[in-house]
Image (cartoon, rainbow, N blue to C red; front, side, top):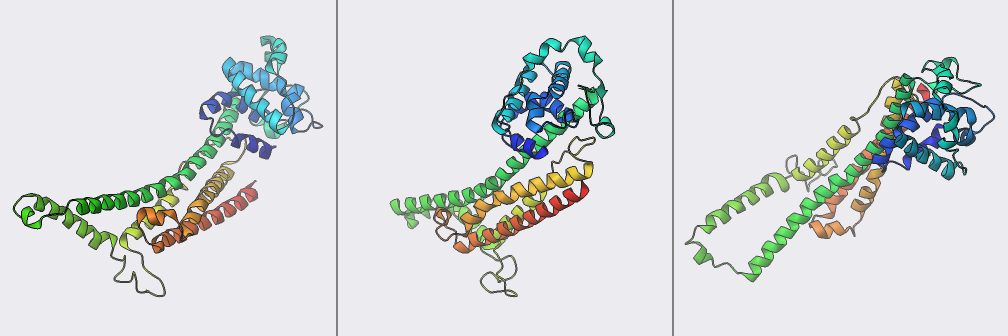
Length: 341
């Protein structure tokens, strides 16, 4: 059941505004779905047509949701029914006539503890306010975590686009300076008598210092071209980029986990492993296009930045190592997730 809901949830990640509107009804479905009303019904028959189930859902919706939230939530659940269950959701309007205040007050109220104590029911129920909030938080946090993972995945491209943009702009500025020098030859004798050379010399000194201290020298000694223990040592600027990406990759996989209890889907321990697994899996796959792009000798960015192939090959190797560690973390987290359930 949960895996089927996951399929639907993954299709609405981009609809952040709509997701807020559907949280109310989806939270009620999440909470009510932990109870069994008719063991003979399959998942979609129960979700889309189950009389006891939908009466319970719509009764709670009338109490806890606004009319707009009921409409938005019904549309989202209806989409699940049509796309994955190949059926049509029985609408709220068909149940509205029986959802009087007297009828709703007669329904048994279920709490979080009842999910374990008495999950099977032979009549409709209404979730308590605390269970409704738990279901809503469970659904909302899970969807938000998937959306956040996706944004962090795009962050991989943001990082490398920023690095490449610096290289492209630097090469373009050098190109313009070279063209201007060709079109306007400098009269050295004339320049010696004005104040401009001082400014020009200062700029040249800054450029020369950065080349000598940051861009060109190796990180350790003189071992950029010469091997050190069988390994080449990157330049300082290359090392800075690599270390920055390692630091960013570690930090981004260690923050922004909203773990709380009680949770309809997971225990506290399982939440941690599940969200870590999801994050590392998304981030690992996000690295694949970068790995592929940096590995080729016909890489268009070789021309755009003017960097050597060895620079891109260095970036490729470290991106590949990070992706491998992430997928290993994902696998181990999934194993621990399964063991904890």
